[in-house]
Length: 119
Image (cartoon, rainbow, N blue to C red; front, top):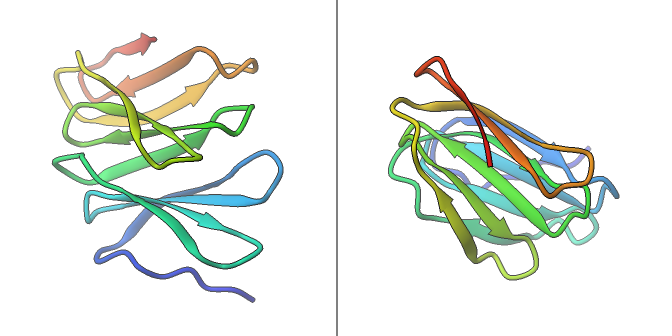
């Protein structure tokens, strides 16, 4: 058994990439993390959200990660650099869920504001 640590508050979500080589975690501490399964290292701590991160999902290509937050934004992250590529704004309440389409080039977010947005 392996245990990944490093968040300062509860972990709300976790996700494998499709090849099983990386794990992403989302936390109430306002961060997401990308972990390497083989080395057991935390590769990146993804900062920028102003509130808890409730959901993390890799795209099918494994090169992007989306994080959804109570700060009413979703963020697209470059998995290879840990850099934020885009901040998705427009929801009026916290975002609870997000998902990529099969091709990994379209994203949907679901919010407490009773809407889903396709990006």
